[in-house]
Image 1 (cartoon, rainbow, N blue to C red):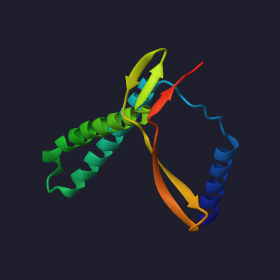
Image 2 (image 1 turned 60 degrees about the horizontal axis):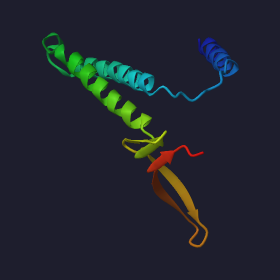
Image 3 (image 1 turned 180 degrees about the vertical axis):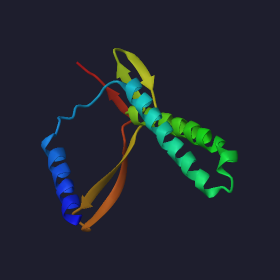
Amino acid sequence: MKTTARLISLITCCAMLASAVPAFASDNAFRDIFEDAFYGGAAGTLVGTALLAFTRKPANHLDYIGYGAASGVLVGSVYGVVKSAKSLAQIDNGVIKFAMPTVFPDLSDSPASRQTNITWRASLLRGTFW
């Protein structure tokens, strides 16, 4: 039994590594937000369903599934909006657009003190210039 399980695991890993596909960046913000909301709703539904196990009569608390799905959609949508916004202000063809900047953690090494510092970086202005 162990040998067949190991063989199946090995074949699955080899198949996953052999079928690598190239990754491309997407520029469609609406699609990204929709996908994040969908996956958030699916995860929230699973969490709401899992919470039914902790009640005495699960049939009386089926609304937990709906609450989980709704909160998952909201959290997923907010995550998608924050993820799609790249900078505080964007200048595009003379039009200024404002959005929530994305904050990235970054590690920086100090040669004088030989310490690694965690810094937070946010893009404040982005634009295209000729």
